[in-house]
Amino acid sequence: MHPAILGLVTIVVGVGSCVGYFYFSNVILDTYIYPAKGENAGRNINRANMVRPWLFLFPALFALGLYLMYPVIETLRLSLTERVPGGGNQWVGLDNYTQMFSEAKFWEALRNNMLWLLVVPAMSTAFGLLAAQLTDRIRWGNLAKSLIFMPMAISFVGAAVIWKLVYDARPEGQDQIGLLNAIYIFFGGDAPQAWITVPFWNNFFLMVVLIWIQTGFAMVILSAALRGIPEETIEAAIVDGANPWQIFFKIKVPQIMGTILVVWTTITITVLKVFDIVFAMTNGQWQTQVLANYMFDKLFRANDWGAGSAAAMIIMILVLPILVWNVRNARNEMR
Image (cartoon, rainbow, N blue to C red):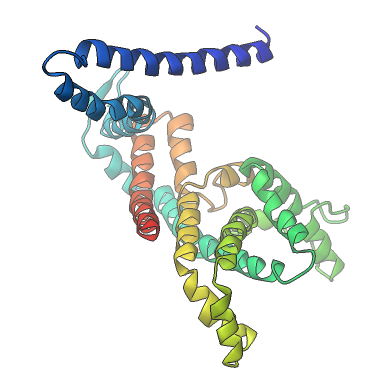
């Protein structure tokens, strides 16, 4: 079937199924389960009205259970088992976790993830806040915002390929197509450097890619927050003799601190799950391993579903407290 026709059929069937479900479920509820007739008509109507919201929520709850809760439960089960020859799994308890904790690569991945957590959210939020403040003060600010936000439209793999070319190193004596090496040689560098193979520092070169992407996200959110600050407070500060630095750090930043924390934690969750950039640029080599790439190696290269699932559970455990805290903060701000 032609893709366009297949898409049209999918839309028609999907929308038709939703309409049919809501119509017939309400008919069944009002006609057979709680009919609005007889001596109990009033009570049945009240009961039907109590059940009706759950009819609308059921598809979403079913989808969440199927695509969110079930994978979590199944991943937890797999992390406590191991494959046996001939197919099937056998229960091994916490052996997969013990094996994982004994591997140097796991601790390298965890250490690198913590390093990413220290650098990327802080730098992305700081650059985003700086860009939001400065672009609101120049005539061509909208154009500048568009350019800064543009990397958000690029996939992580696409961004990794772009920056891999920036870091590219050709043998000495050849023209350097890598921008960083071209600059390095132009300013008197003795030989091209394979930047992404230099232990420890190569992690920072990879982080630049995610900072480049996430700065646009932080800028858009923080720019909206800055514009929401009442002008009266800024005018009062100017009347009191505050300079631009004091207005920014003592007036504006405290009023948008809640938004800054939301941006910070959102980027933190992204960092904990970072995979594409590392996979596309180094594949975890040269001491750049991260937890998501470690999980991928275990699942699809070593075919060790138990250890891979255990790594996935570790990532979820690290993400969950931040996610809960973020949701709670968002709810408190809405009150």
